[in-house]
Length: 335
Image 1: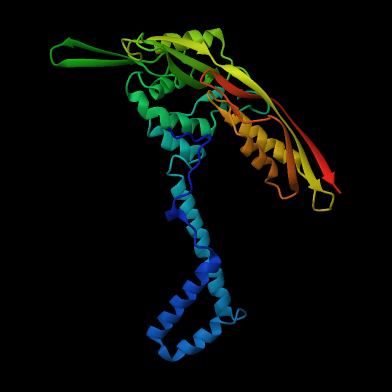
Image 2: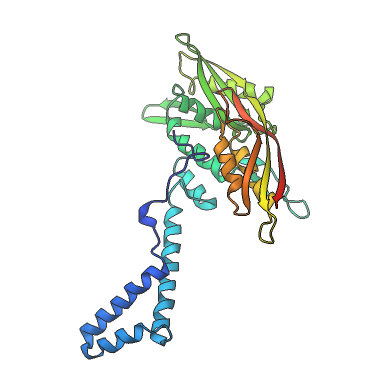
């Protein structure tokens, strides 16, 4: 399955922007063609005029090319917001709603505080990930992705009852649980424990703790929900387990030039590493050594990197999640 947290797709070719510089010759040719059609005698003069960048007509076309390019960029951005993999903020909320998914409240704020504290909401990446899982939720569990979806939307599936109090009348009732806790589940990884027995383990990663270890209450709630007759397969015996952190540290030496333009912005690099490591806090997550090098060497002021930890790519299994215990960066300016 495509994972928007780690996998990438190029922007569609249909949304390629021509650019003002490349568009200017098109506008000039269009103007010359129109003048040739309407006033042939002026075509040569207009062509010569457009070869001079100081002429007002040329300046006008240059400005027009920039306006057209800006509009094209705006239109392309609006089109991207219609695509799930690129939509952001409220645009992503609208796309997720197509799948019956709503952005979760991670932590409630306090509107009465001074200043008011807003709710902490689910990130775009997490909402996008759950939206991609949504089609698997139309059925009960069974496949890994179906188990994953139900575990990550914990408690949101209503109890549905159908009654016929009298002939010709059917009443369908939806009862939503009062104690749903989907926002507490960061990730889930199901596996068959013993082939042919129906025993299925679902390992959970939680937002309750920094390292992702879920509480006993969350494990109990997840197990009860996944065992519901309208969620679990009749032949499955489901057990919820706590995912475990696979601890590692990022420690590196950044080398730069001892020149006025060689200053290394350590905090910017640390922020990128922090985002990468937090997004990779997933069951079966990977901390790729090459990505660490890339993030630290992106700035032109960094000439080389000595990565001291981790010494190799960190690969977690389905019961583990890579957990970064710290980021230590040392800067050395070489003479």
